[in-house]
Length: 427
Image 1 (cartoon, one colour):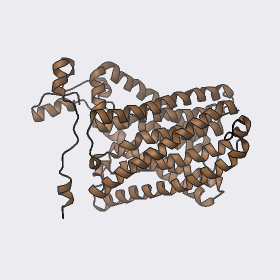
Image 2 (image 1 turned 180 degrees about the horizontal axis):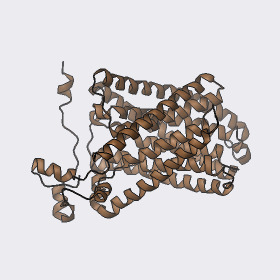
Image 3 (image 1 turned 60 degrees about the vertical axis):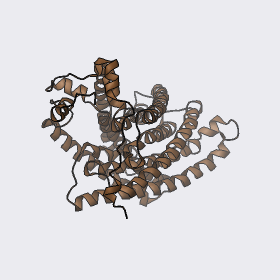
């Protein structure tokens, strides 16, 4: 019988093109930067879309605090603070990332598309933007100085997010097809992020339709319909990718210690789709938007009640599968603790947002089913997410202070050249 180690020694995925060919045509692709860089250059040149997960995490925690079934004085203030952290970080990171492409242009683009992990993380930029749509919907449009004009702003932002998220989906997978040969045993868990992004679009569309200030049926129903299409993509694309990723777990075992936390990403498609379906069903029926629209056979008040019941039923199924994936991720982390090889890595940011989607689903189930069980589970999960957020913040600040993260003055590209003697490449 073939051992697991021997089965894993097969060929690794390679890029379809070579840099040598491109360098002959474009000498600018040869990297000749300094080994020791300024802090600003290091920050911009090495900036990765993984940093947008901080915005995503702050945004999902803010949303959960805002909608928590057990409210107390000051909770909405904490929610607003979390949303402001989301907004400030998003603006700062977006400026840096835009500078990354402006300053390094073709080389930055090649580094993106030739690095599978970076390419899979690229949709985090658009997902982080969607959390700001929730911010405008839940907080700004309901503020005394906000009102309906910000409902319109949130609507425009959602349609921008829709174009962006579907564009990201096509961009990522088309480049993975064109640039890489990835064997099924080498699929990164991060490959499921584009599916999470489209499912997030659906969930945010449901948030807008349910909670935007004085939203009209004419404004909300097109978003509901588009969100239903998006949740279909999230569910079925997620299920397809689940097949490959689960087979990979069976063939190779748990991911390496630095990547173990990425297993939480598998919760995302089911958790976000379960939340999206409940929100969209509630918008159609409870909030009466289908009745106000009243066109055709489907967009009517009589169809809305059946749709809401179906959405809750499907949400229960998806919540169950999401809970199983969460269980696998927790078992993997416990396995690392038992073997004493659990280490913190930036991938720990993958814990919060996907788990937060499942928390949103249980929060809505607690409301729709009037279930104390789901409400208590929601609170427990939220406390866990907040603890992980502060743990990540502590380790991140420590590594930034040590010069090991975000601003690394010594260029890893030229450091690799010094170790191997090879010509420096763009990645």
